[in-house]
Amino acid sequence: MDYLSLFLLAFGVNLLPAFGPPTWSIIVLYGINGDQPLWALVLIGAVGAALGRLALAIGARHFGKWLPRRMRDNIAAARIAVERRKNNVLILLALFVISPLPSAQLFMAVGLARVPLLGFTAAFFAGRLFTYAFYGWTARKVRESDVGEVLLANLTSPWGLALQVAMLGLLVALVSIDWGRWLNVSRDEVRDKD
Image 1 (cartoon, rainbow, N blue to C red):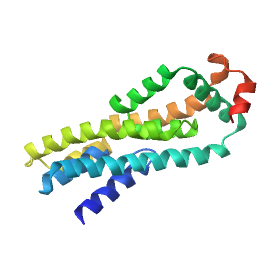
Image 2: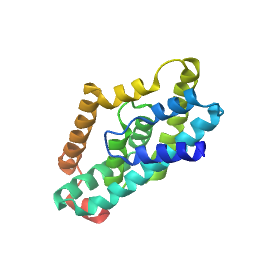
Image 3: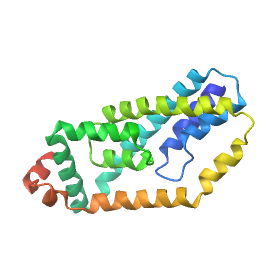
């Protein structure tokens, strides 16, 4: 039951487009309060997080149908520009692995852009295995600290809230930019890819 609740928590918080607690804090909670093997907590947490983000991206992809035509064209132009050079795709994959930024908005952007999701999800999963293992190991070393305070601090931190709002604003700005004009993508290419 503990493993199932961990998976469901990790999956659920990663479905949220913003303001959810970080999954590492859930790993820390389980790592401090339980005796389950750390590798199992990390693996189950990373699988739940990756599947939750994948579902979020798929939801954003379906939501994109209702965006104004201009925004859909802007997103399609950005996707075309990224797909033109494989180095761009590798840079975006690396962003998912090492980025300290909230990943929800990154997955929403990838979903809206209709970029293939499996590579990004795999990169996210690989990166989370490393970070969750680090946090879980650290949690086991400091069992005497109060996890409730850590979780509350993350949820109520003015800087954390401001970062979430800024990332949502950035997502709106990114879909509003005329990427075709800036990245030399013609309207015909955009309409063909749509």
